[in-house]
Image (cartoon, rainbow, N blue to C red; front, side):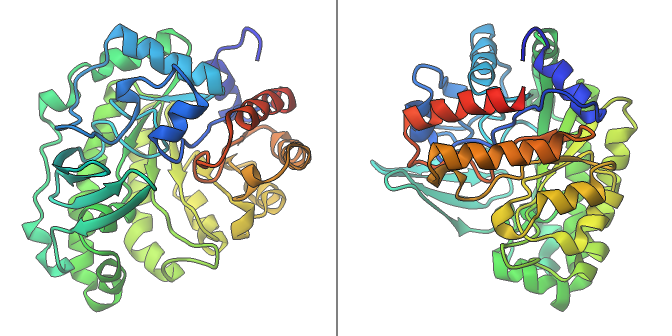
Length: 382
């Protein structure tokens, strides 16, 4: 992109100026994939899951900071995640999310326990993940949920210095918080109980979301005070077939918290918010835009999120991130180029468009194919 910094490129995009289109790769399928596709560039604190002890919140040293910048330069990623592991994938790691520590380790697996008490099992080869323990059995036990102290100085040690360093090097910065819906079934209750709770115990669910929601807002405020340009969160609201909840459930339980988050973000001049939600969410997309989000991703074409239609309807009000197809990396290079050219042509009109994959670079992508994609994408976007 010439002499323009990634920070300048992002600011122009978010101000809906037409020009070169930024790229924000969501991440990699696993650590082994990242090491294979970016040989020599994956540094220890890049990965957001520890395989020994606790990940911690210690500030990065200059070597780690430069390594993070080198990764972003290599893959042309337009924003850098601040916090240990926060540059690995979208919406994960850093002090604004619940931290974890390893409680069990085997030759081909490890189990982590999060600050809420939830335990997740990770198998290395082949990659597999599932939740093995949730701290609450039902929403009515919301008062029993134990959350860490957001104001703990150790949690934020060096965070502002990391933000300042990256911005001084021309990087656009972001910090992650937990989602207001997704965090419930990741860190608090099992998935079926979470979904049933909206109908069976609505008041209990409101208290539970309130516990996590206030923690999220406090964490977002801490990162904004430290200077981050953007707050990002993962709140998957749908599948390829439709919403995970009825629109009225979103409007009653989750939308008010999205609105509160955006009020906090926009109380800091020149700051932005970025929502990740997979799925066919067209029925609530107007609501999502109304909450005040500045960016939304991934707009997966395979899930019925038509970039052209969404751009025409919402492109003046929000920056669209994504638009790629779930199986993009299974296609040959010629098909990829045709598809990406069309997406960029649609998205760049009137500014406000960022290229993003739909779920991380798959583990079956070979290095030569990945490098061809990076070269092709730079050419098409600029």
